[in-house]
Image (cartoon, rainbow, N blue to C red; front, top):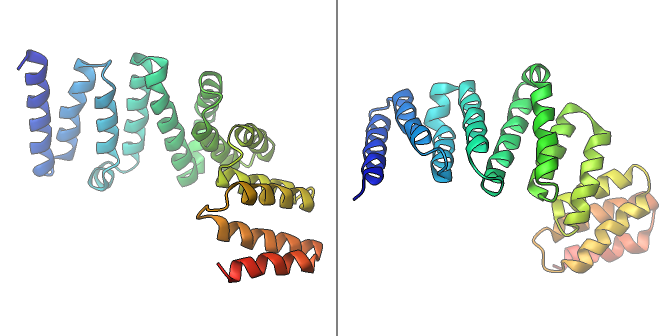
Length: 228
């Protein structure tokens, strides 16, 4: 066993001992040493983030668990190549969504940091739909409907079969043109005849046809829904 493996085993063993003894802060401090010793090894950043998401850790650190997770993502982004860093851009976006939703005052105080991350992610990973969904969520929490819809259109073009995006697209179109909203849902239903989300799609399309007072279509989709 080489020196690196010995070091890793020693730190992991010590970390586990601290966790077993409920010494949460010491456990995190111990494991964080792996990030310092091996800054180009992606797995240790992922493991550290997993530790920080543990309920016991959150109960101990409270809000600072989120802040420590952000720091971890920043270090990973600094040392890893663009492909490996993608995971941490997404994770950081996810954290910003949670933190903004939990405390909007925090967002106000960190607005520029959030926007910087959005801009950097769009530049580096413009076709990552999971990232685009998180950016949509951030704009939604900000109340910026124009930007949310702008990102929605990009994501929808990339993944028109994604049911979450279909629902957001249908909701957006419903405000402007109910028939266009219906068209989006009907196209999705035709392409995805075995999706577990069909019931939800049928319920929504029935409601939309109720707005247009098209009883024939209402009965058609209600019959399908009732006989599934």
